[in-house]
Image 1 (cartoon, helix red, strand yellow):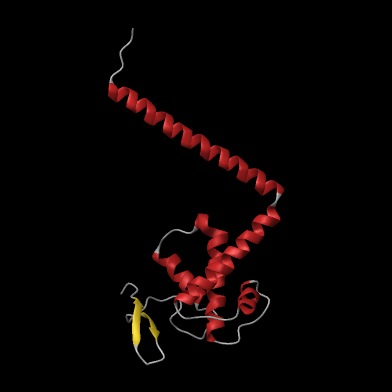
Image 2 (spheres, one colour; image 1 turned 120 degrees about the horizontal axis):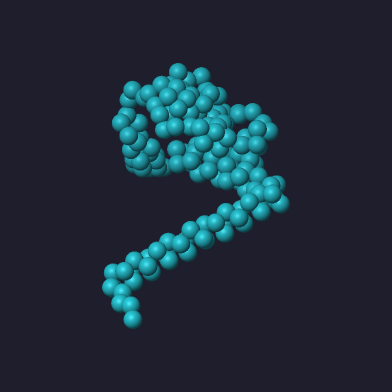
Length: 156
């Protein structure tokens, strides 16, 4: 009769849990491959929906808004921006597209970050695009009574 130590049994159980998780990853990857090959249009529409939602949410944080219809048109590149808010939306859209199309070749480097920053300001006549900021900025809300509240303080 063979004796196992408690630690060895526990290790075997842990190994089986890891193998089970790895098998699940491969099953999910296989399902993704089938979906990609059978329904690319569905996935494309989901990516576009995610881009619209990301653009809307990210810009809303900074108080940049437009109508849902205009937002969808701007993200789909079906119209031109009418004002500063829409210019910022277009810049965000372009930067997001670069990230989606080239994520595997973009490193987290100062140069890439500045390039994305330049893209963000591409639709504005703003010399800040592509350069590091020189003053502290704050994301704040101004209320009808005139009171201002800082909602978020970005890095200096």
